[in-house]
Length: 153
Image 1 (spheres, rainbow, N blue to C red):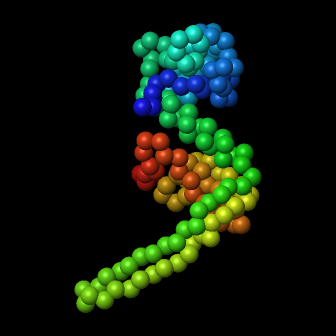
Image 2: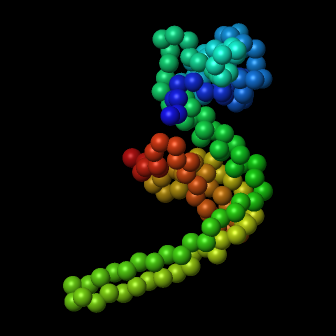
Image 3: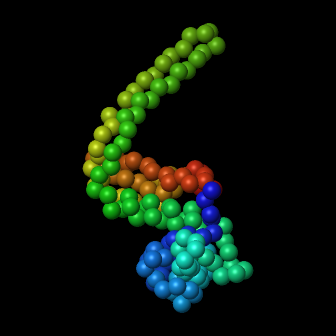
């Protein structure tokens, strides 16, 4: 099960850092990626090294926030991505028991060159995590850890 409080990453001077790169304890100068409260670098010999909130400042969802941040960072550095083929099929049935089938190949699949990556940009009434631009087309990517994208109110 995903521990939503402790994580191996935190912010230091505005940059996401791994617990292995900082000194132990509160003196590491790191902050939670979700709530921005100070965190303690715990680097003992029994448990896996991790950042933990000070007592009384814990927040839920820090690990999910880090997964989102790391995923966006990885996508920003990619030069290409492999996508699957996508065939669209929809059947519309009518009261007279007749139906119409619409089929269309929307993507051939394969390796796609990435021209640009946009992070957290609004597209109409929603904001996907990542938009990959290739050949003038937009590929929308949502990093789903515990929930999928919802509409913006």
